[in-house]
Length: 242
Image (cartoon, rainbow, N blue to C red; front, side):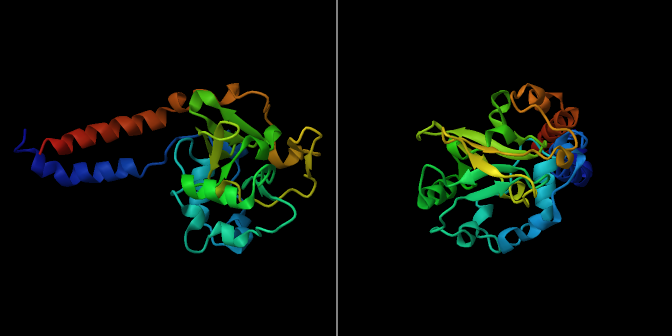
């Protein structure tokens, strides 16, 4: 068999490359991002230059992968140089697909602490106090995966020794949207953040954000991802036989 394998080496290598470049999931586009796509304005978020292709793939066709670590600080992006550390009001980050508010930062900490946490993890990192809870679903059954009420993939919740026990690390390309005209971020008496008005037309079918049940086990129900993984293992095994 080893004598035959060299004949098929180019084909095996091509198959391996194909598998590693397949989409991370065969998500139902009518389910993720409510069948929509990121706003064109994502590309020029805060006058930066974001990669729209990355936004579309990570936010709307993916459940497990993320933009590159440190993307927020890459050339043409440089998030924190575009935020005012002396601003009297925190920055609100909006869903890149439907424009609902998702995070408001910094809250309960300084601008430098917000930046330090983000630089440490490599992705914009938020605390529980900074989440617009009605618009963000965290599913612990999928490793803390976060998804917006519009079905936009956001990132993951990571355990860490801080005040509330966790940091919520998100993909910048998925929280670089333009706000809805009628969506106003407010603070309640207990310090939590919410919205005064929900624009249901912008999301087609608003989701029940009181539970992560509807998002559970997506990864294991995703046959496309499973097949890709099997093919990747098989082709890697063949290459090791040389």
